[in-house]
Image 1: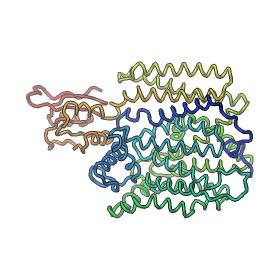
Image 2: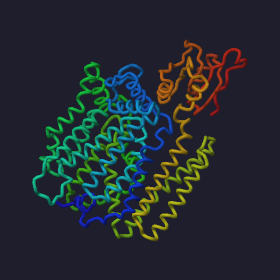
Image 3: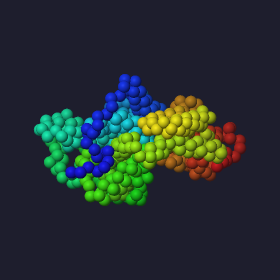
Image 4: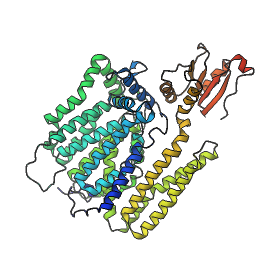
Length: 569
């Protein structure tokens, strides 16, 4: 079988042995990798309050588990909630017990899952392609937009993707892809890999359901179709792997179904089959929706995939076949995208399992650019290395635009940091281009991304907190009255409604004319109009946007005047 002329298809043992790193180089690589993993996965997890409708709901359920001691039935506002399985809730509840209730604690399970997935994939890259590829993977994967974003989200996407990534790394060992192809002697049974595959695939099923089996099974199935190695594929059904899988996944499903007779109907039928086959959940997107999502998730390393795809097309036209290792990476990356593109309900997090293998392919493409002597590859690498400069420039322009439109903008330190990144990166690249140090050019790009992430986390996110979450306004209310009564919402969007419920630790009722006189009301513009229409005098305490306002109602002795006008847009 011929290999495509791609480094990603090459054998795990390089043709020429890699030059061992000196001690100083090892220390430098280790320090940069550790800093990258910390900044991109763990730094400033609580820089912003809960965003969107999912984070506050999942955090509420995890906090409820920690407080009630019921680790079987997920409950939202006291009622069973079966939209997702239990793995994230267990992680969040344990984190709350260890570190207290906070946004950082709620997001910690996702950060840990991202770290474990990165380490597992780096180990696989080392076994398949050598230490150099593994080192670059430890830098490129954490600095991709998808991994940074979802590692900072209190949601099920990263735990699911993390567990599935580890399971697929173990599957590669079982399929025999990590063996030296020149070794034809009988191989011992990979017991550890079999147990790890079953355990982590079961954990992925606990994170998001049967989609884990479909994604891993689909990738391996198409790998077997293209390589005709069916005997190797059936090794995944080894009794040790099956026993580890069922021992991990089944106990919770059985316990939850026994305590909640409608569990399978709600979870399996409504939140799996109906979500995939019908537009009932209203997340309707075009078929090509995931193409720009994937490009953004792999950014700033998206361009590294382009030469790999070009050479793959050339290989197909030439009639050559890829090697089995490359086919597994491609099937692992492309099957989730194809599978969820057919779904009637599409959300960005669905294709997160495709990002790790895509970045591994990008690393192999980077290895070819670093080793090539052609001028085209040199300029291509340098344009890729300039990507953080363009990103910093775009952020700088957007901040000036916000300031021009009378919106609160980040402090000047943030803008100075962006300017320094642009100037420093440009000067560094100019020097590196002259010296033709390609490794250093890509390293400077990674360092620029890490600095950008730090600047955004320390300066940009805190200024966005009041726009995107109600955390600041809730703190304002609790500072004035630690136990406020008669707090209502008025036609708030569901993202803020769920977040308000979490921060007040109770489900806030919707205000109606029949409600008791409110003390505080979190209201949209339409909600404020309803208050004025019914003669409720109020004082505007804070305005995040025209759709999200905090008001305090006024008594008869305070009013003495017509109700306050609505906020200016």
